[in-house]
Image (tube, helix red, strand yellow):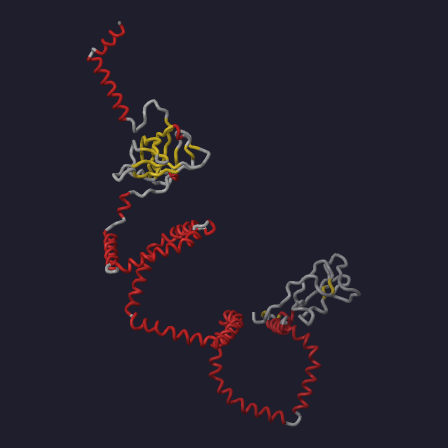
Length: 470
């Protein structure tokens, strides 16, 4: 009885009932107001994420995984990246069942409705490692870039709308009055579909890699995307080209096409006869290739020769006029008595001198010894002072001692005693004679100190001599 009276007392108090009702309403309103930000006293999984552009994403927007709400955006603030660019940093409050989020997950800001409301879409990765609470999802995970509905409609600018209008008008004119033809096309389409089923089944087989074709096509499109403007200009140029063709289509192009079959018939009849000539031409040009390559290197010399030959050719008529009397004089000389005997004697003389000349000639043509000898003799007899020429009064005193070169000796100088007295004599130096290569030994022998050398020097200054033209 007392309990009932107590309850009836509480229920009978309007002030107490009203206070309890107001408290319940306030708690309900508070919970409803903060529902988007998470319920109080509930443990959450907090992360930070960076995106290049928040794109109207605000505090309280949802975070979804697979279309299911798993949290809310607590805060959106701008930050500056290390490369100087500005991005948006999001503070995320996620449910505990989303922990841990794989580190290779991606995030995308997507529209929730056509009115501009956004949400953050999280696509979990497959990494075994996850983000710890409080860690930052880098800006590189924000991909792909979304396309908003306003951006989609922005492509329908005035030029595009005019082009669409013209296309619709052109299609309408093309289809107008062609109902029977369209009906026939639709009827034929059924036959195409029926007959095309085996082909389609073959295309979709795994062995054809039809999916790889589309991936390659996607890669090709991505490759040519940077040159889209160039391709557009190419189509504009093609339009001008075909417009020019249209102006000459009749009668010129039409007549060319009409005469094409007769021309092909003539070509088919003549090609068998021309083929041997083409084969011979191919072999000729193949054999000519080495000469053409060599001609590229020798063409400067040939050009100089041609330039040098011009004055020679200009003077050739004078030479030709002199050749006839010269040839006549040679014939008269040949018929003169004693000419053949003299030529025979000259031939015998050359045969006798040939062995000697084989050794003497290289001493001048290779080593220049004869020219150097006469040049040095002339120079020695020409140099001097007021007292006379050096060659006339300077005397040379060789060192004295046993076997010295200043008096009679029984042996070559060999430094007997303290005097540096060594003989260096090469009676038969190499002068580029046959079998000696191109070695000019005479005059190039190095003096061997403290050593007597009779014959070839052990070391030379060089193997050639200076030219008298230097």
